[in-house]
Length: 594
Image (cartoon, rainbow, N blue to C red):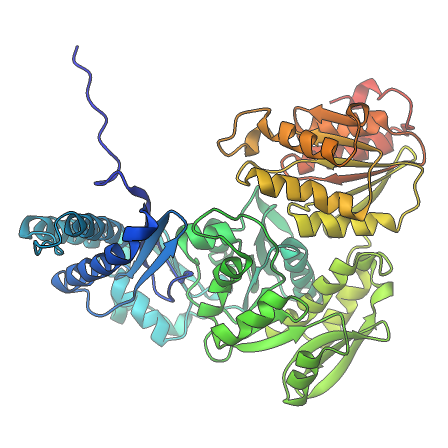
């Protein structure tokens, strides 16, 4: 039997990735396609010019009118984004690929005028576009009309939704009504807030959702732990991308939407929403370098600033004035900005308030909100449970940002104040985010801390707790390079040397790395920092790491335990140990061994 050769995924071996962006993105406010390629630095300039020319020619010949064509040169390669009509985004990926192959032919034979694909290629692309449009014949017209009506649009491969929450209606793409048949009078948007940044996204999302509940509205929110509709958890897992946003906005019971919006989803697919009322970027931390052309903190800030593209003239972009990358970003985005800072003597924030701008800061331990030309006292930050009496400075920043964001989307100040006075007093308020548990005489501090800044902040908070010995559970997902793994170790060690470290493997988050590779990198860095082999331990899962840490602990010890892969399982196990009255130094009861 003759073997069938594999069909290449792309028409050129130099193509790395080709994808559609279904909403606003790092390149543009418009949907379109992006193509990433490998090319050497010496030839990149000429290739990019030919690529842009071919892309514009194809857009013209397909009748797509004017649109953005944006190129970027990156280490070892380049990318080109081209905007496209919303009903032919799959075809747009093929158009982009053909434009690149035309550019490559031009580079190989510069004397030949081959920058534009031939007529057969154009005919095939027209056929593809016609076929795609046939599956969603009314989408482009309705999408444009919704913008004229000031309504949010969300869509996927099957469904289009106009409006949001209690004001939303959804149709199959194949049965979407024409513009004149849409019941525009019956549609509206609920308040929509987008939450992004490197650290503090989930805590901020939960805070704002709690503020909406205190104001008497039923919130819907999505985050890296799931989707909640009112008080009901509808989905478990990481829903900080477009799927989570669509699930919230399509639910008819949702009266306010709070959408954690992670970098990965924005870069892979663009934003799921076409408009929002306010957004926050909590901070920028070195992480995820090497993915989707992100090579610096500035690149990361620009990627997260995608949320600013859907705010419009009246929307507020809330930024951390203590983060230099965000201070620099403000001059690049051109949005209406609200600033928050832990320092009451911040020159930029003072000038902003003097001009009548909105802000939040801490003065004499009081959280002060400046809104609508007046100051509002929201309480003593040390009395707010989530700040651990001020021992968690990163959560002081989170409450500042959340308070300003909440006011921007219409939460009454009294509801903001009452929420801050109680949020964090129950373990159910913010599970897996800076929780302090007392398990058998051992202080266990859990958090999602997943990058150097986040882990450093967690370790600083742990310093405020007295302990006989201090222990650390350490791990990371496999989509970071070795330098980033080592930086995570150094961030913890810069705060304090630990007496014992348990390195965890996370089989579900290897992201292409072989098992055992990352623990070796961590162990090597720990050795270089002076930790002995007897003090360093390796566990084959997050749950096993938590078990190992507590088996090593005795009464009076402290364990810093970031949780990423098995958060719910580990937290449940800790609670079962507490309920069983287990004491450190004794065997685990048979009923809670697994």
